Length: 333
Image 1 (cartoon, rainbow, N blue to C red):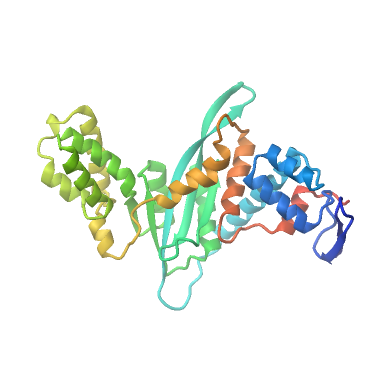
Image 2: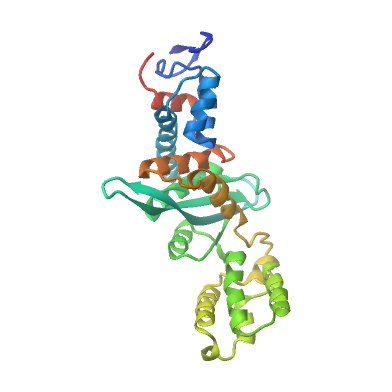
């Protein structure tokens, strides 16, 4: 079907071969694409003011409809991809890094009239030698739903059967289960997260600032195997403070799972042992919009915005603007 769009402000029209009919927004596809970008990057109120200056009158609810359409279409696409087998290619496989974490967002419960902090689960996937080719996924959902969508993300990014998947996280249980479900070949405890427990343990051992600083630097460089270090330096666990014993217990558990043998990982050519990419995503992709001072969200609003921003900053988003516009504004003009 050949559809014609007319701009509200200048009355300029444009036609093209598209499936579906004119939508009720009354805007050219290019204009609506820019509207969508503003709705992702700015506060809705600020976006509406800027659009009004350009002669585009849209409400906050209309901006939100674009984000809801993005999530609806994106989730369906990821779940469909998750059912497909990984492709197989010619030549040696690549190493991919998947970093997973969660961050809490304030959501408002209208029936109970109170705020509740809900966890937005996020993942960033990228080839080890090309960290700029990042694919993001953020969801306010259960671990099971998030896991299925993450399988779809692997296929969206083009991960092949012969590729190797390396996981990095803070060691949380739900993430460890998810890493096993994804089939990661090596699960690495984020060295920056490990360094916090490492510091607490060194304090409990009575090490000086200079000695701790030197050991911490060696750890961050990937030159310390936690298990070997514990065997060498921790002789009397009972003499440690309560905080020191808690840090020791955590590091021993991670070491027994082979998550902290950093020199071995480095020797195997694994260049990434820290979760800097996912930490950046938590601060910029999620925190930069959903955790503004004094902000709180409805559950659906937080879910829509988290998913939309993750897709917006991904190397190759799932969403097509023409399909989005007909989902958000389905009625013929």
